[in-house]
Length: 390
Ligand code: FPP
Ligand code: MG
Image (cartoon, protein in one colour):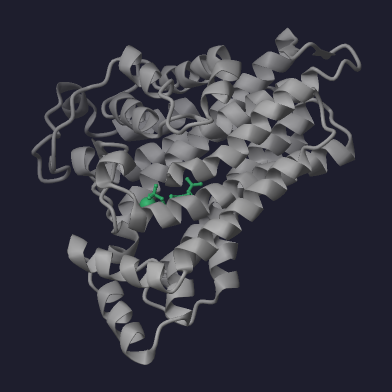
């Protein structure tokens, strides 16, 4: 699969790609510059501690996460420009490997429960470890592919402080490398995992795409309800978190009760995490976010805090929000205007309360599951997602 895609990218322009002549050509206009990232800087990016309360999960999953990041980099070794460059760029700007870290830590959580041969002291036996790393790679590859596509769809300029890949290599290259990563994910799954994991991750990819499509068509639609927006959050973010923790349960041959617990933990974590993200889009600082504050408003995205705000606004305020949603060039002051209204009408408080409740449900789902120490790490990480707001 890998070589098929790579070969198709090489067709026709192979020489030009190699020589880097495509930059500045009519077909692939250069829209920016980015230095080619070294392995060390890409791997260091995944080591960064992005929010308080995350350090323990990082420490528990350090070695395996490095192996996951290496797997993504190795997938493009020797392939034609710009596959390695774009993959490096998105792996670095895709960040902290939260989803694969959750998968690895969940596998260890079950590995420490002292039953059967594969479960011992949180150390995964060789074959289980290999499968866990392949699946971690698959989950991250799906995540990175979705970010490459999402930045094209949203027209985003920055991701994690780096220019979005499509601004450097163009939308065509970004979409195709996203396809490459997406295909790589399924190649990794097929290496060692049973059909039920393949089914889980295929269904997850469908849900991610449905969530993104629904969000796209919700743009400028003021009829969206709070439930609609929460369903989008569940599909576009909750589904992949859920797939990560659920895959771990399947790898570890968990009981149906453990599978349900881990699935619920992952889903609630993902939903709570995205709700915090949606608030930060209005409340955060561009530097901390690594992207411009207020982009959801500029993209016409009716996220959960905005749904609440619309429902609590009078007709004049709603008209004003509608006007701002329809423009893609809102100034920071106009984003502040909406944020002030959100604060005044209690939307941030209520959104934060829902995020807190959802994250608490996630943490509670793990009660009684696996090793107590690792359970504590996973539960604390989930609850700490809220601290990104402070
Ligand atoms: C980021 O959301 C985007 C997602 C969580 C999912 C994107 C999904 C797709 C593009 C469809 C599926 C694609 C594949 C390859 C399976 P956001 O825009 O709210 O966050 P951001 O501010 O980080 O961009
Ligand atoms: Mg986006």
